[in-house]
Image (tube, rainbow, N blue to C red; front, side):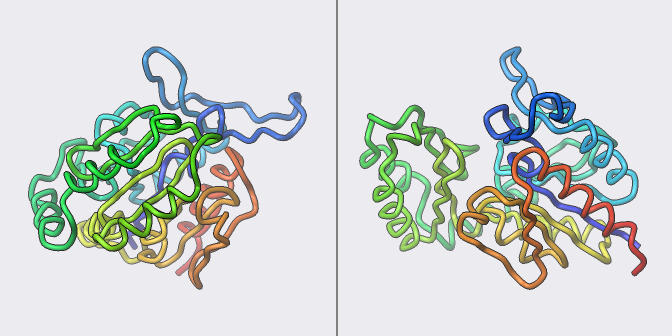
Length: 270
């Protein structure tokens, strides 16, 4: 039987130093493996135990890294285990097959965006006009598919985020606040649609998923079973669903627990 496992990366399987949540005494902290270097600096980590679990998972299932990162940002990550045949980038805007973008899939995504939501230029203009330079550090557009801001969280106006969410909703877009980034993403641009396509190609009998943010909710709902950690947007909203298990662990140990759950499920008799 073929099992497809689609997992978000940042703050689900891999963690920046700020997101590790190492609350235990230093002497009991887990050994960490660096899985991403950016501008010659270590950027993202997982525990060594999680690295072995991911290697085992890649040997026994079709593991699909599933991320809002652009292709370039994703390609900085050096995950342990077998090279994935499929990867989902830019929140479903691109499917990579053996590292190469599937052009037909991307063309289908662009057609849906043109038909179903306001154009990126309108959203980008609104962000530039209404966001306060006091707390905005960077404006970014991801592969001409969606926009995001890098902000100072302690200065960010929560009312502005709520107003942006309402404004975006009326134009077919979704707003997600993750760490220091505010994402504005078209509703038709989803990880779940890309997961269904990969599952079809892989002939999946079972699909599993994991994620922590609002942009992962559709992915979790599309899978047969899902897991979310005890941190992130979904945990803060106490979000759950019948086939989604909310785990108590937070930080890098949540990534380890998620991989244990995924591997246990892959190995369970069906």
